Figure 1 (cartoon, rainbow, N blue to C red):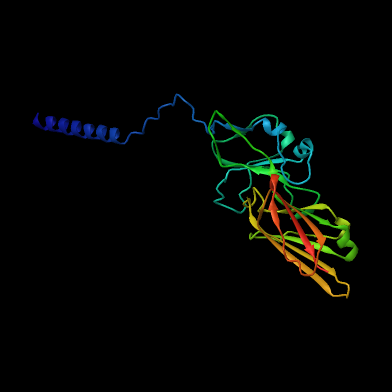
Figure 2: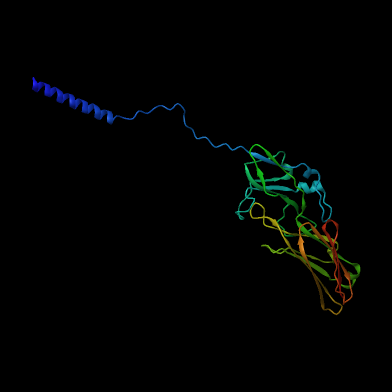
Length: 286
């Protein structure tokens, strides 16, 4: 009897051990998920920027020859960069680029800081009769769900120069010419133009801006305007007169008249008149 009891107890112990092992090694139960997981793109609420209406109607072009407002606006391009502090000055690109006339509603942008340039930007550093106007905004912020209005007024981004040869000096020096260059201190070519008697009273424009907004940095410089007048004297000897104008910058117009003067004349008066027009008379010696 004792032997049978021992056998029964042994079988019971082994069975309990096996049951315990099976519990420890059972396959995990996978619960069915009530929500199917999908990749959902993050939705960013946009803000916007708008150019105040007054820019379409009232733009004071204060320097140079008169420009027709509507024609000027036809040439304008609006560019916006999201790197307003130029932390990456080369190759930053822009987030918006459109002709001004094609903008029919506020421009949608992601929240952040931006700069805006409106201009009829030209890659030519010097031009006769063709000016570059524009405005570069201060850094502005876009907030989600709201509109940021910008008040912008266009101005001349070039420094303008008009050369007027008097009839007396042309009679005395038929081959007279005047060369004007703008030393801006920045990278790139030095803008310069040459006036002959055929260009009398013509206005030329030298760019004061450096860089290409959106691809490089963009800023307006202050530099030096150099004038060099040359002609052949009565004896066949070259005659040269030079003049330097310091602190030349955008939205200035140098209206320079070259008159016949005495050989000893050395006084050159420069006056700053209304509307940033600088009148000057340069005597050209015999």
